[in-house]
Structures are given as structure tokens and as C-alpha cells.
Length: 241
Image 1 (tube, rainbow, N blue to C red):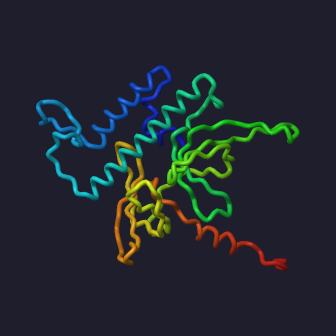
Image 2 (cartoon, rainbow, N blue to C red):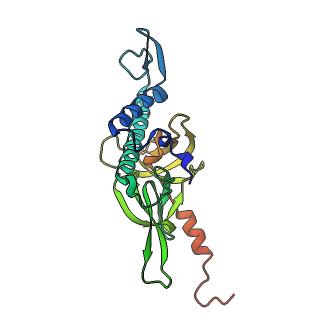
Image 3 (cartoon, rainbow, N blue to C red):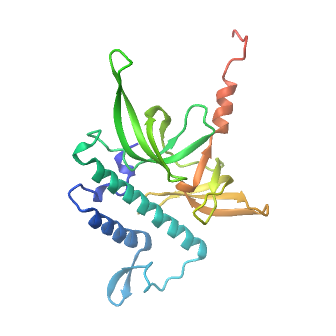
């Protein structure tokens, strides 16, 4: 996990007012995600503005809106963390804040995509000598819930899922979550936002094979293959080999 994975880090400083940072993010989103139309009254305006003449398909509009909302959420989280930490940061090297990770324990069935919002060390007084433990604060990318004091042993680098990976996908178009089994067909990384977008397939409620494009925040990997391999490697009771 490196700082280069965070597409918004370069524009954030503690000396810049939050309102100005949010305006800058909004401007960058218009130019980077929508492109620039130079034929709109002589001014450079985003293609997503009212003066655009480009017609997007409904699926592309949906994906574009999901991308924009995801990047805005990432930007606001990073701004709030920077403003909150200020000179009282728990860790002098918060390079991982804003990075995407996977959260799971050894026997977890699901690998949860999450975003790092803070990292710090906690020293246990039960050990001699006292041993510092690295902890994270995370935001669950699927549910947007905040997770605190997560041991670094359960936080893993995020790698785009390969073709054929079995996952659960949130196919709901509303605020509620609707997770169903799905399979990864391919993935792409948006050059402007660095967001991972998956092409997935699943059976809809009518048992019809459906294809869709979903961002990483709507796709949750299933670790059943890893668990099966893990259990297969465990010796049976009474096995002395």
C-alpha cells in the first residue's frame, strides 16, 4: 500500500480551507471524468454540464454517476481526516490514508473492500517490554460504516480481482444494499480517478444472465477457495505424518 494509490492526495494540505479543497475536487472531477467541451459559448466547461451535446447511454450515465459519487466520498473523507488530525496526528507518516484495502481475518468468508481513514500505534502494557501495535480506522466501502481499532494483521493490500473470481455484488440502484453472487469478467482502472471498475455477470431476479459495470465499492470477494485450500492443508485428527 503506497501513497501513490490515492488520487486526491496531491491537492490536500492543512493550510487550504476545506471549502476551497472541495471546490477544487469538484472542478477536477468535471474535467477528468467528463472531459472538456471547448465549443460551449467559448468557455471550457465539463461535458457533464448542461451545455454538453454528447449523449451517454443509460448504463454509462449510471457508471459515471457512481464514479463521481465515489471519488467525492473519498475526497471528503481525506479532507476531514487531514483537518481532524492536524498537528495532533497519531502517526507522523500517514501515507496510507485514503488507500483502498481488503479487510478479513484468517477464517473470514468475505474480503471486505475498505478505505483507510486513519492509522496509529497503540502500546499494550500487558507485554514486557511494551510492544506497539499498528491499528487502522477504516470505512467499509460496501456499507459506508466506520470501523475503529482494526489490527494491521487483518488489513491487506487491495489487488484488482482476476477473471473468474467469485464475488458478491451490490446491484441495488437505491441506497439500500442488495448483494447477490456474481463473477468477475474483467476489470479496468480509470486513468483520471484510479478507481477500479469491474465488468461482472450475475443472474437477476428472473434468472436471466445479466452483465453490468460496477466500481470496487460494490464488489466483495468471496474467499471460499482460499478457505478450502487452507482446510485441505490441515492435518486430520490422529494424522502423525
